[in-house]
Every structure is written in structure tokens, then in C-alpha cells.
Length: 281
Length: 312
Image 1 (tube, rainbow over the protein chains, first blue to last red):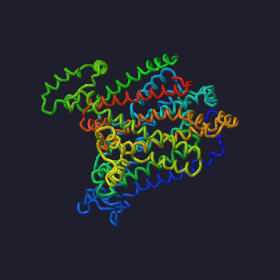
Image 2 (cartoon, rainbow over the protein chains, first blue to last red; image 1 turned 30 degrees about the vertical axis):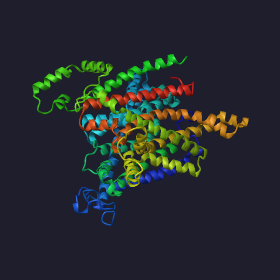
Image 3 (cartoon, chains in turn cyan, purple; image 1 turned 135 degrees about the vertical axis):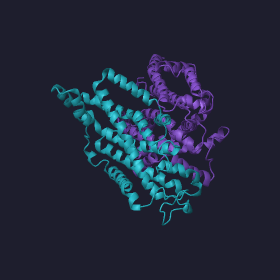
Image 4 (cartoon, rainbow over the protein chains, first blue to last red; image 1 turned 90 degrees about the horizontal axis):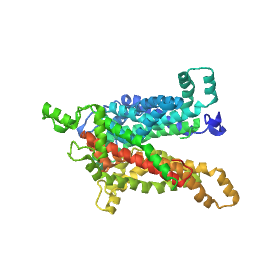
């Protein structure tokens, strides 16, 4: 089976990627914990305007300082974590599901279905990812829901390609031929035997896709097309702070670091999983 | 010479993709919940005027007829009129395009040497501290939001130290280089890591190839083997990735242009989106897609030139 690249035949693969998995995993769990419990532990309203305390540098009352409306930056970042994590998870799932189904059908059945679906892929990848997302959001109107719609319309392509290539290899594998010989229906073989074997590259890709989705969502928030203020999404916070950035270093710094560290968590986990599962990126 | 038929065939194969692209940009406008004609005429126009203009623009025709007239206009270089500026969309786009092209070229000029140097260093010292440091920096570079890095660079290198202008495009070539340095740098910080990861892996793979062992056995100097055999062979996969990355780069430039107020295609795009100038969004999306197609095609052609075994 190893000649098909289906398993990690290399013995040293056991410990591979474990450092990345533990660091990435800890970063993600830390952010998940902060997002779920942070806002209530801190107990500060992220939208509480305090015009007496505007643009304060970090100090004992406001650990990460305050913004131009005197809102507590830490409270906003913690609340923003909920939105940005939600965004990266919910933004990845619909394209993943659509892509997996399209790719499986395309790779397994081949023929004209494959030709049509792959032309559709060719056309979609001809558009730069962010441009098409911005154009679709621009047509539908700004907001998180339309961002998800745009992602679903654009993002499935990579998953479809990945899993199709996998399906083409697996179609010839002995255990699939055996299943076919035993007379199982094609859809049963497809979802019970092919899909589970094809999922590890998908898992690895989905993790790094989450970074891209989060950065795209934050970028859209930044230009005013994503999450709308005053909701404390990190990209929105950076955009809010940009005019005041010369008055204080802390205003844009912390939301950006938050986004980078969350992204780092996803990316390290993706790298670690790739090493562990023997997936080439 | 013998490659010309293959190139011709490749161009013919592009045709359905090009038609598909125009179908997508055509349908894009149909996604909008608002009425473009109403937007164009303003709130005070009467229902009769709106209906008359709709008929005049052919918006009451069946969808496929509308598409045919859209495609026909495109073939004549007519991308429609901007709802906001009342100018031909093509003129608006061509007017600002040189700036975005300049920025994209600038990014490549900064990124490609950096990529090659970092990858070679990392691959030759694989597993050693230098390699680890480059790897960690790469991972960090990929997760930093480009617009945030842009703001930070603008603040510290631009405002604090006064080394670079933080917005605009400047006049003249040298001034463009000066103005666009920070935008190009912020984009490169994100682009280089992706390419380094790829090229490093590719070099390491080539290093174990049989021909390297053979060359070494022949007694060729390591430096010669590396420069003459390993590196050229490693570049091909990275070149393909670069093609994909340029498409991303074009998309990413939209955001970077906003951060640094570079009046290019990205600025026009966001402005059009915020003003609901549908025809401009449509035209720009088409342009970006055509740009990507051209880049991909060029990469494929260069690949066959580097490695004649590659089939178009």
C-alpha cells in the first residue's frame, strides 16, 4: 500500500511533527479557552465607551490600553477572538464539504461529469481568491453572512482538486477493486472506503486554509466589507485604530498579534499533522 | 519551432475558460439585490424613466440574450460605464493599472532573490539552527496579517524614523520606488515564506536524486553540482507555485493598496464596492481574472523552456 503513498512507511515518522502539534495545539486551545471564558472572567463590556479614558497606554486598569473611544482593548480582543475563531471554523467547513463531495464524485466517476466539474474548477481558480470574494461580497452587500456565502462559492475548489487527485489514485487500489468485485454500490464504496482514506490531506489543508480564511475575513473587516463595527473583530479593530496609530503604539499592535498567534496555531497544527500523517503539502 | 503547435493548442484550450470567466463576471452583477438602473438614475427618477432605461440597456431581455450582448461588448473593448463616474470602465482601469503592475513587479524583484538565497541557505544547512530560524520566521511571516504589518511598518519606518513615505505613489521612477517600498516589503514578507518552504523542500528532494550521487562519484565539486544541477532542477516546482502566488499577490495587493493609499486597481476595487459601482466591480474582476490567466500561461510556457520534458 505504501507505493500509493497512502501510509507513512518511514519508521522515524512516529515522532515527526509532535513539537508542532503540541505548540499549535496549545495555542489553539489557549485561544479557544480565552474566547469562551475570557469575556466573562474579565467582566468588562467591550463596547463600553469611556470618553474620559481615551487612547490610554496599557496600565493596571486597562491591561492592553484603551482605544479612541476609551473602550478596553483587552475586552475587545477577547470578544474578537470569538468572532475570528468562529469565522475561521465556519468559513472553512462549507467549502470543505462542497469540495469533498465534488472531488469524490469527479475523481471516482470520471468521464463527462469529471470534465464538467473540472472546467468549473479551472474557471474558478482563474480568479484571484480575495478579488472574487471581495467582488461577491461587494455585490451581495457587506457583512459576515455574505462573506461565508462568498467563501462557499470560491473556496471549494482547492478541496475538490486535492480529493479528486486522491480519488484517482485510490480508484486503482486493491481494496477498492475488491469492494467493487464484491458488488458494493458505487456510492457506498465512495463514502465508506474512498473518503476516509482521502481525508488526511484534507485535514492538513483545512488547517492552513483556516489561516487564510481568518486573514481574508480580517482583511474584509479592515476595508469595511466584513464584520461591521462596533463588533470587535480584529481586522475591524485594526482599521479603527489606523488613524490613531501615530498617537499610540498599542492601538493596532495587539489585535494584529492576536490574529498572528491564532494563525500560527492553525499553521503549526497543519504542519505537525502533515508530518505525522505523512502528507506532502 | 516544434513547440508552436502545442502553444496554439494550449491557447485553444483556454477559450472555454475565458468564456467561463465572462459568464461568471456577467452573473456576478445578477447577484446584487439592488437595481443597477435605479442606482444609476438616483432616487428621484420616475418609474417610467427607470423602465425606459432598463429597456434601453436591454435589462428586460432574457438572461442569455443579455449575456450575448455583454460578451459582444467585451469583444469590442466595451466594459460598460461606471455608474459613479459616468466614464468608460476600461478607461478607469487602464488609468490606474500601471501602478498596480509596478507594485507587483516590485514585489517580485524583492521576493525572488530573497527566496532563492533563504532557500539555498536553509537547504544546505538543513536541520541546523540557521534552517530552524528561517523556518520559524517563515511560519510567522505567513500568519501575520499583511495590512497590519503594513500599518506597523508605516508607523515605525515611515512616521517614526521618516525613512519612507507612508502613502501615495509619487512622481517619476525613483519616487515610485521610494513610495512603494513599504507596500512591496509588506507583501514580500508574506510571499517569500510560501516560496521558501516550497523551494527548500524541492532542493532537499533533488539533493538525494541519483544524478547527484553520480556527479559526486565523478568527483565534481559540490558547489558546481549545486549550482549547475540541483538548483535549476529545484526551480521548476517553485516556478509553478510562483504562478499561483502571483494570483494571490494580485488579490493581496488590493488590501496593501488600501493601507498605503496607493491609487491602483485595489483602491479602485474597494471604492467601487463601497459605492456599489457594479460595472466597475465587474470590469475589475474580469481584468484580474485575465491577468491571472496570462500569468499562468506564461509560467507554463517558461516551464517548457526550462524543462523541455514538460508537456503543455
